[in-house]
Length: 121
Image (tube, rainbow, N blue to C red):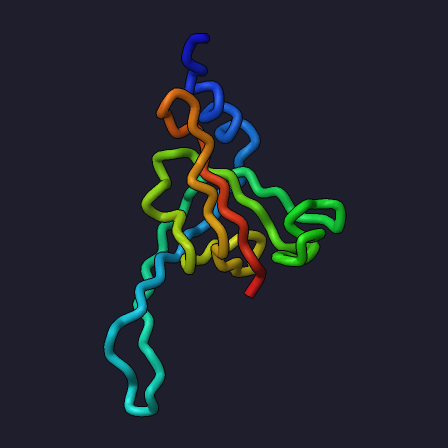
């Protein structure tokens, strides 16, 4: 069995993609004078991905982990460092927090696509 061409998946994402902003979130170890942890953010705009809005029929929703209207996003492997739990995605003027990152779809030790399941915040 030969290797699947990673460019095929990247072309699909490029063709069907929407552009989102990914907000990286870092919780500082320090706290405010009220005891709240502080948060540092930085935004990366122009990230291409394919969104998939979850419906009642989706397994994630049937399991009760997510609800209809939450979104799965599919990203190119080059965005792996941005797509981590707790980071946020701005899509259609709404923010979604990444709750579950699938390690990606690997074929013959090559990462082809990263799936991030998000909840609207």
